[in-house]
Structures are given as structure tokens and as C-alpha cells.
Length: 363
Image: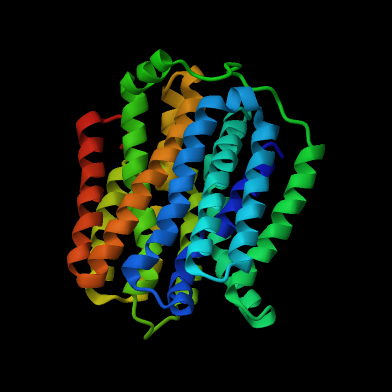
């Protein structure tokens, strides 16, 4: 049960986050904007995530988990309502930015809460994120069919977070192990100087940059000859989620999990960009899935305990920053040449492999 609430939080945020990629084409059609301009929507959402995760990572000890979560839910509801009732592109961008601000409170708080559990299961925790990706396209389809506008899916999310907020008000939360109100500048510098802290953070940044970039633009890259965009995303999240739920089993079966999956992803993503077949996107989900919980679990087992909150905040902040930069870069390049844009994720994946071989901190 101690894993259930953090999973519920990450699942709820996943629904909203993973509605953006399959909806990009709908936003482009509604507001008559180009691919490059539409890349500003995920960029501003992720920019809000960066800001809030830095703040929450530094001051979660002062806020407390309950207060931080409630602030996040309030921002989520506000952002969702803005998008649902927005009549133009700029308002939609504002709403997604406000939602982005909410995610830091939700992600950092739920991860820190899970890290304090006696039997924390990060595979199941991040599997819940993948489950949100599976269900998000179904929510979009339902909202479009029965509520008349794809943006009304954000009304569903508003109700979800209202319910979650009420439950959170009634729920008791344990005190944080780290009781600092915030980190001193010296403490932050010392944390980033720590080899384990910086290495694992860099690996997670590289991983998330590729994952977010591919997920954001797969719908634009793929040709709908075999599968529709919504179906391809749903199946991607199925394979992604299954592999996350069995991360511990996969880790035991494949000792060099990071290196093996990175190598397979290099070939799978190359085939996706070259042939634009959605099946390669679906297939890649299984190998993306275990990497984040595997690296995060290794990291939290090796970094200093008083750096855990800062690490969680920095992880979601900088992975979102990396994702926003890579997503925007891919959007600009894809508009000009889809095949050439393949260079970006391949370089990042090879960088992950190089770090793994160079440091041997995680294989």
C-alpha cells in the first residue's frame, strides 16, 4: 500500500503529459500552425516543469509533501481549465505552461515519498506512468466523440485532480528524513561535485531527452499505413508499461541492462526514422521502459541520503530541460528533413553508452 499512492500521483500526471504528443497534430489543425511553431507547446510545458522541479527539490523539506502535492494539484486544475476553454494558441500555451509548473510538485513529492518506503518498487512506480500513456489516447478519443472537442479531455483531468486533492487533504504523510528547509549554495555545489550524483543525473538527462523527443514527434514521423497514430501511441505505452512493471526481472536477466537497451534503441530508432513504420515505435517502448527506473534505483542507492530530495528535484528539472531542448530541436529539423533529424537521438544514445563504459557506475 505504501507504493500505491505515489503510483496514483504519477499515473494522474502521466495522463495529462502523455496527451500532448498525440494531440500536437490536432492543435496544429485547430490553430493552423506549422510543425516548428507547434513545438512551442511541449517546450513551454516542459519549461514549467524545469522551474517547479528546481524549486520543489530545494524547498520540499520546508513545504512538506502534503502541501507540495496540493499546490501541484491546484496548478494542474488551473492549467487544464485554461487549455479546455482556450480560444487561441497563446492561451493554450499558457495553460500548458501552468500545468508544467504543477508537475514538479507532483513528481518530486511522489518520488521522495516513495524513496522513504521500506519496500519501494520503482519499476511499478514508473510503470504507472506508462499506464497513463496507455489510457491517455483512450481519454482523448472518448472526449472527442462524446464531448465534441479534443480539448475537453482536460475537463476529465480537472475532475481527476479535484478528487485526488480531496483525498490528499484527508491523508496522513510521514515526515521527511531530510528536515532542511532548503539547501545552502555550498550544499548544492557539494552535491553536484559528488561523482555519483552528477553521473546518474547526466544519464537520466540523456535518457529523458531521447524518450521525450521521440514520443513528442513519433506521431509526425510515422506513416499511418499499418496503425493509426492513436493506436501506435497506445501500443507503445503498453510495451513501455509492461517492461517497467517487470524491470526487476529484466535487470536480473540482463546484467548489462543499460548498455544492451541503448544498443537496441540505436537500431530501432534508426529504423523508425528511415522507414517511418509505427511498429518500430511500438517496439522501442519495451526498451525505453526499464531504463529510467533502473538508473534511478541505482542512483538512490549510491548518492548520499541528505541529497535524495535535491537529486529528485534536479532529476525531473534537468530531464525536462533536456527534453524541451531536444524536442524543439527535433521539431525544427523534422520540418526540413526527417531523415537528418535522426542524428540527434543517436548522438545522445551513444553518449549514454560512453558514460556507462567510462564510469562503470551502472551497466
